[in-house]
Every structure is written in C-alpha cells, then in structure tokens.
Amino acid sequence: MRHLFIAIFCFSAAFVSAQINSLVGYYPFDDCKIEDKSGNKLNPLITGNPTCVCGVLGSAVHFDPASDALAFPLTLSNYLGVGSFTLAFYFRADKSSPDQLIFSKREDCSPNHAFAIEYLAAGNQLKITMSEDGTNQSNFNYNLPPGRCWYHIALSRSGTKTRLYVDGKQVYSADAPKTLSLVSADSLHIGSSPCIGAQITPFAGDIDEMYLFRSALTDANIADLYQESDKILSNDKFVYLGKSTQIDVLPSCAQSFSWSPSQGVATPDSANTLITPEQSTTYTLQFSYTGCTATDTIRLRVVDPATIDCDQLMLPSAFTPNGDQLNDTYRISNADIIKELIGFEIFDRWGNQVFQAMDINTTWDGNFKGQPVNPGTYMYKVRFKCGNVELVKSGSVQVIR
Image (cartoon, rainbow, N blue to C red; front, side, top):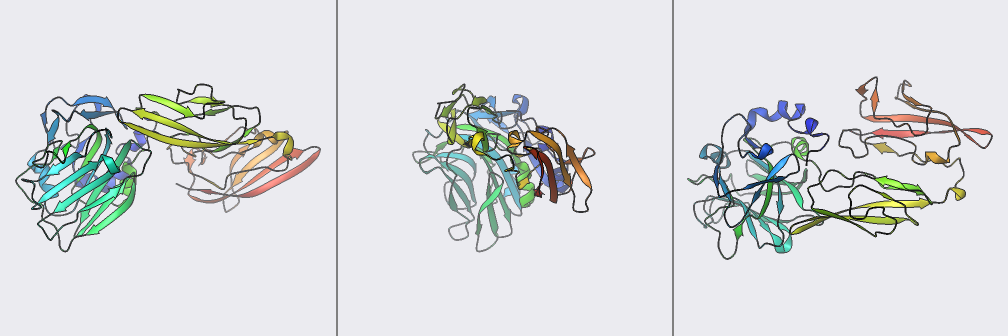
C-alpha cells in the first residue's frame, strides 16, 4: 500500500539527519526484494520462498510457517548483544495460527543469552524475551490493542532499560538488574529458532519496513517511523438531514471491506463510499484479511437545518496540517447554514493575516505564502449575513504539527 505521503515518510529529512549514522540495516522489502537498503549490504540468508505481498509502505514479505525463514548476518546480529539498539518493524500475523515466533537470536532454548519476540495469538499479546541468564532479564508480555491487523513495533535498549513502542507510542518499559549481555554465536532470525516445537510455531504472516539501529531512538524518531493503516481518513462530522457525505479511507491491503450498519451506505462493500444517514450514527468499517479483521469507526451527526439558526457557526478548535491526510485542513464545519459569506480570515498573534477566503467551501492548509506556519494559536474572524443582519464570529484555533 503506497500512501500519498510516502515521500515525506520514508527517510524524512529530520529522521535521516538525526539517526542515519546509527543505522545498521534497513529492509523495506519493496520491489519484492529481500535485501539491505542501508548501504551496509547486510543481506539475509533466505530459506524457503517468502513471497511478495501488499505492505504498509510498498510491498511486504509473507512468511509461510512451513518453509520460510530469514537469517541475518552476524555483523548485524551482534549489535543486539551489548550496547544500545532499536529494532523496528511492521507485522501482520495470521491470528488463526497458534503462538508464533517472529524474531529469535539464541543458541538453545535456555534463558542464557536469549533474545526473542513472539506473537501469542490467543491473547493478542507480544512476548519479549531479553535474558542474559536466569536472573538478569527483561522479559515481559504486552497486550496489543484490539481491532487492528498491522502493528508497528519498536524495541529499544539503553543501559539497563528496555522500551517497547506500539504504533509510534511508548507503551512499556522494563529495567534489568544490570546491563544485559545477549552475545551469542547465533544470528538474528525471522521464523526460525531452537525453541520452535509444540509450544511455539514459526511466524505466519507479513513483515514490512524493518530497521536496526545501534542506538536507542528518541520518542520523536520512533513516531516518525510509524504510518497508520486500515484507517478511515475522514473525521467525525455533521451531516444535514437528507444530504450525503463522502467517506474516504487510507489505502489498505485488506482483501475485503464491510460497512455496518449498511443502511444509507451507497456501497457497503467498498472502502470509500457515500453515506446518507437518516439519524446520528456511528459507522464501523471492517478491513478483512486472511486470519484477521481490523476495524475503524466514524460518527456522523445528523442535523436538521430547519432547527439551526444561521448565527450558530461551528469551527474546530485545532487542526494538524502535518501531511498525514488526517485533520490536515481547517474550515467552517457547518458552512452550509451561511447564506452569504462576506469574509473568512485567520491572523497570527501579531495580527498579520495568514489566510483569507470569500467562498464558504475554501479550506486553510496551514500555509502562508506557500510555507507552513509555526505551531501555535491563531485567531479567526468570519463575517457573514444572517437574514439581513451582518454578523461576526471570532475565536481561536491551535495549529499542531
């Protein structure tokens, strides 16, 4: 799935300038190639025939648990042994399969110098094993959020502290008694481990955008690596009674889609569709994959225009013009009640005009003279006619980047 804003996501300038020197390996799996794109040429040894499938960004690699695995060179794997690191990747597991091993670096199934990331399907959990021996460990389980298929995971270590990030946010941290040594003669593997057997099976699913750094990335750097998937692009909105509204969805790898309730939905089995709600309703969109279903919702509030006075304008209190296609523009929420717009203006804190519109459907993209404005508080003023009376609506809006 190639999002419209991939160009600003993949290796964004801020990300590269901050972390490129610590990048050890980068495996985007684009163009159906399983190779290192960091420039270090640390290509993995391929077992079986991992196939090329749709990914969060470009293509991903699908692993058949019966045959497919990757073994990364020791040059890369040794960075997990001692010192700081960050391992980041997307995964989508077949949740109908048993507990699955995603990553492993260990010589045997003892707690000595063991590193592993497992997906426990029954509880939708991620299991992290980082163990030097029976006493010096950072082992924990984390409950993944429900209603999703693709997850972005980042695991970082700095000193004795291990941090887990899910979908761009830190969700857990653990401290070992002392700095862990995970040095072993074994390589980092996907889908292969001496622990595979009755209790754990090889990974069944897809991997995309794998990174390994020899540093613990900052929260901001890890957030830069994350891109949402299986997401309704349109925000909750007001809809006039009897009117339709277009609902847009981010590009998705799902095999099928289903809206619920379906009443008023023009094409219930399509992601992007028109909806004509008869009453205020929360609609759920299901993204169906093999062995997994993700969901997202949107709330449509129906308003009878006959019950609204034309002086009851509504404008959002904030928006985020950061290029992710979510809440990227600013406009009058219920502009249709305006019979005649005289002017819609936005000013910075010094009183400089940064936006002006004479059309009720014109939106502000957060730019002034082609350049993004700074984050902060801006003032808006809307001049319009209500009946034969000229009114002014003013207030503030937060620009968040």
